Image (cartoon, rainbow, N blue to C red; front, side, top):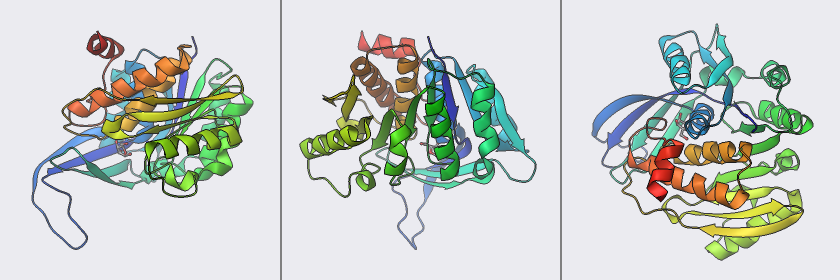
Length: 307
Ligand code: RIB
């Protein structure tokens, strides 16, 4: 069984619950403010660990109370944080999140220490002994050149590389060294050259993308499930999955839960279709509670739900 290495962001999340998010120039009343551990990288590491994977997290926090509390949070879920550095000059990353009455979120991220990740963090993948059985997971909340360097290093080391292109960007220049590309319905748009008008058109276009770059592409569609074009043994096979109908409280971190569980399944050698299905169920369950990491299910919770 391989291990999961997540190289990416870690944030202090400030979540404001409100009826609806304010429009530009508008002030609205919120009903509660809460503080949670977050950051797409650290969320994905926690999701993979809760699903039973051995996980190492490579990231940076500031020398402040938020940073210390995020480190102890990684410890609580058994994530190896030996490769997390503490910045002397930059604060811990912060995300300001509004969650509306339907559980939809809007996020503004202030990178802080995440923005200082660079070559020395990537070099730790080799020091950590990462190799062909292991999975590397990256997102886009740290400098893009560091993500590119990490994916190249992971590819060189023979790892299975997963790129979650969030926040959205055109990353086609990186896909040659990506094995599994995961995005949501908005993040896929810059990577397929524009909007799509139906689920079947989206599936066709990601199949073309996957064939061109010889990678699997998965697009999560919130409550509508996901579509995927899986690149297996040199051929593309498409997949269209629904997710359980659940009562959504907060969608924050659902995509991260999907990515983390997918990484855990790949590291464990689970069949690709079953991996996507388990990731979809876990992502869906994570929306039934508030916060990103607090809401992530364990493997046994996912299995109990399926049973
Ligand atoms: O994907 C959700 C995450 O995005 C939040 O935890 C927040 O920190 C931002 O990074």
